[in-house]
Every structure is written in C-alpha cells, then in structure tokens.
Length: 119
Length: 116
Image (cartoon, rainbow over all chains, first blue to last red):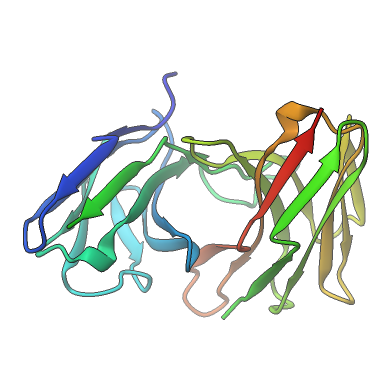
C-alpha cells in the first residue's frame, strides 16, 4: 500500500481565497483523522470520521473550516475564506477499527502533510 | 479534557548516549500511550506504545515506562544513533464514556539531536 496520500504537498494562497486539502486513506481503514500542526499549538485533532461519518468535529476552529468524506477512499478539508493564521501543516491520518483489539497496537498512519501558507 | 505535557522541548546527546523524554497526562481515564517519531518533512510515525495495564515495554533500543498512579510515562532510547535525530511526540488516548468519542491527545514534542 502507498500509505496515506495527501495533496497538494504545498499550498500558497492569498487571504480570502478558498483552500481545499485532499486525502486518500489506506485501503480498508475505517477511521480518518485531520490534524493541524503549528509551532504554537503543536498537533491538534480537528475532526475524525468513522465509516465516512463525521464523529467528533469539536476541534474544528471556526465555521470557515469544513470537512467531508464522500466515500471510503477520499476526504477533503476546506477553508473558506482562508486567513494568515490558518498557515500550518495539515495532516490526514487513518486507522483500522478501534483501540480495543486485544493484543493489537492502535496505530494512526499519517500522510506526509500539506504545508499551507496564507499571505 | 485531557492535557499532555512533554519535557524537554529539545535534547542534545552524543552518539551512544541514552536519551529520556518524559510526559505527564491529566485524565485518569486515558488507557493507551503511544510514542510517535516525526522526521523532517514527514508525518509522525508510531515507534512504540503501551497500554495502561502494563508498566514497561521494550523494543530493541527503545523502551517505554508507565506510572499510572503518578500519571507519568517516559521514552528511553539507549545507544543513540544520528538517525534517531527527529521530533518525538508522546500521546494519551481515551474514549469518552458519554459520547464514545475517541481522542489521541499529543504532547508538544521533543526535538532530539544526536551528534556523531
């Protein structure tokens, strides 16, 4: 498997523009997570999906952020309108099932990230 | 909610020395504690983990210890090598009893530099 795939790897945009980040999880994984990483706040969970359904979006900072998962192999994170303080690295991660598999590690597999710069 | 503190923020060692990174967590309901390694330009990758019913786990040169009473857990790397240089994150995982929401809360990271 190619792992979690994210695109684009880098995005530079002007304030006020719409930004769409894309993610393809590992095939067979039924959990998908979006994280944001900044120097100030570290790695923060924004939202996660289980079987394509959003479960917890309490980490989404504002209504300007939205995420969708139309099918098991694709998810988007959209920022509209973007602001300079949205500049960060955004990671998508996926995992198989839940923690409670006896004897199994619970690994979230991270993609390479999208570095977003909003000027 | 859960809060995970991690120390130190940076750690410099000589090749062959040991490195220790420490974390504390606040939520006694957290029951799983992974450590992730993030290399430059990449996403974090799981290197070792420990469940709350275990006090210590070892995998070659890395080991993790957990003190549930004190809510402390630590990563130990022995015989460090230059390729161990990276940012290391601890994390605590719990399932919310009311909502069933699952969350992995990360520490702020430790930048480890191993000098040859």
